[in-house]
Image 1 (cartoon, rainbow, N blue to C red):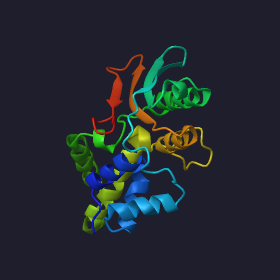
Image 2 (image 1 turned 90 degrees about the horizontal axis):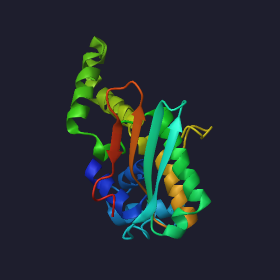
Image 3 (image 1 turned 90 degrees about the vertical axis):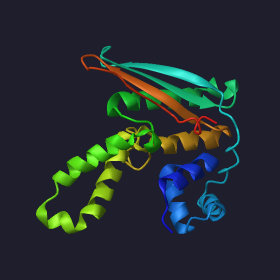
Image 4 (image 1 turned 120 degrees about the horizontal axis):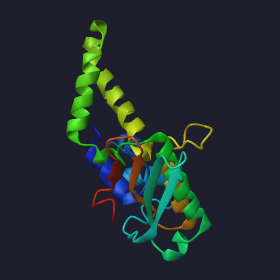
Length: 211
């Protein structure tokens, strides 16, 4: 059974697990949501799904200024209680994300925030770059290249610049924080400003992600 982006989004909203973890679990469970949740739990995400219906209405807006005032970043990180929001660990993660945004300059928060027109435009450019001998495998090649494009430009999927192993994404550090504090944690939105550029980069979660 083909795992669609909408299925991955739904499982992610129900469990709070990372997008790639949800995609792999759904593929292994052949699209069965209950089985996918069980697989996620077996892989160590023992609290998965328990916080799905909670509302992350508290949190903080963290601002970070970089490079002598040439780059400014604001991120809104939400949780369930003010007590957690005031905690050192929560604020350290907010700071880490803001610093990452300053360095990595993501264009979007997650895949659901990327306009179809942007993906189509990227496909057009990538297709034009294919060599004649690649045409027979064009569809498969483009799928992989678009996946790489989204991972490189979506904040939640970008690899944490602090992680020396090069394996931990921003969504992973949010999930880890959520497990430690025992609350639902959501990165709601971010904005990045840079002196000399024509505009700012700003992104936020969808209405469904904010619940």
